[in-house]
Length: 165
Image (tube, helix red, strand yellow):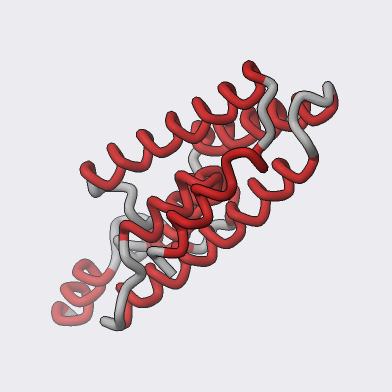
């Protein structure tokens, strides 16, 4: 009888639960609990701002589509990198992640970092990530303010991308 009570006190708390039941419950929550409100707010604010620019005909809908496509691709790259990290496989190069963030995939990257819990603690990576966000948004503002189109910037940009693929 004494052995039974000792085993019971080791395997459960006074409330009769296992000590890690709260941790297990947190892991089982859905997507909404995995993405921080700040990351979601930044992403939604950017999307709303981009939609407003498209609505005012200051930015073409092709640019919005480009942001969406690059965000989806970047999100998939983060998922692949996280999966490779867990299984000890070849990883996606950080330079490639940063390139897609800089090109316009940063909203997807920001959400993917939270969703996959990937690259959120690595400070040098986060510093470069936020620099790519600032540069990307700065280029977007510059395009709007100078009334330039993205097609003027594409030829040198595509030749730059050819070096990585």
